[in-house]
Length: 69
Image (cartoon, rainbow, N blue to C red):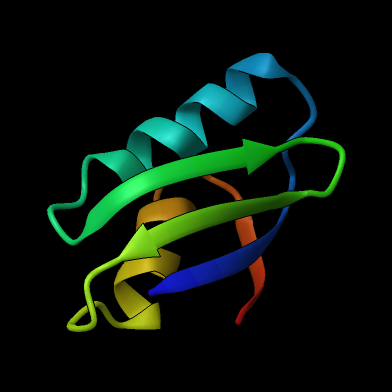
């Protein structure tokens, strides 16, 4: 299942890499693509993944999740 996470606070390549690493480290996540321009992350996840798990992974790194769809 694909989810789009809108994220505030990313401003550079390091930010992008930090968010990618945080999401990719979750066992429920298959692939991650982060876009600075779109301020979002596209993730392919297992059906058992909750939005809360994704949100926590991003917010623990200091970024704000605006929405998950």
